[in-house]
Length: 330
Image (tube, rainbow, N blue to C red):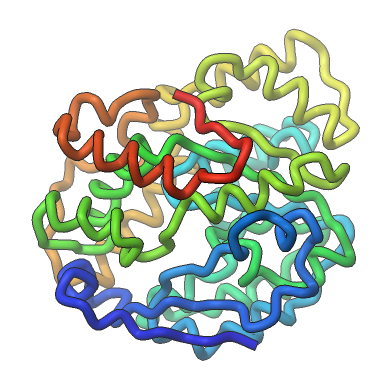
């Protein structure tokens, strides 16, 4: 079902971390059961860099039972995942803020493949997803080709959030240091991004696969930048997608709840529990001041990346987007 290519270059080894283990490229052998729009695009469906341990669960995830009333949140890492999860869960659950405060987001919207990525984690998140009460909310960073194949026949609700790679890279570097225990230099990490040898990369083909099916009625495609600049419009689209109706006052309150400053302080939705969990499983000391929700800004890469690297990244983005109509928002 899958083919695996171990990443053995010096650059790939330099960005591998003990908590995840050795990295491999995971490719779907036969993409014929994927949506036609993704299969017909100029380049093959996205593969993914994951860890060796993922091999043990790849087929199990691919064969997972999917239900029509599921809601899947799919993004590349650091592309507004947590934000989108909280937004969609509240809209889908009649704005039940009380329940959202009592049950952590990691339990309301379970990260499907987490146990495969962190072998020392003592729970099987795939089983947790299988045992969830329906309707389920499920989070995944996997590309289309590695997700359960029943997604394309059962056709549950899927929400995809895209983000400009320049800001994603900036955020992911800090995430990789503090969450995964990466001890190398920023330059090495950035070079590894350009060579697609970092965990969960490449990001752009991941996004293009879902862009190709954006017009399907069970798919909602949003941009991180769109959520920052016009959340009211995104909420309007999300309500239409879910078949929900709320008053302007209710949506205004939700927009305030979803603001970055409020989310950052909301321990039931800011992934602070995940940060503590990752620290406990990593032997690397990380700064206590780091927060999972760090800046949440558009254009933050200009403050942290050199002009030379931004030029390299622009060329990298242009190469990956060749032949596509898609444009990342700035």
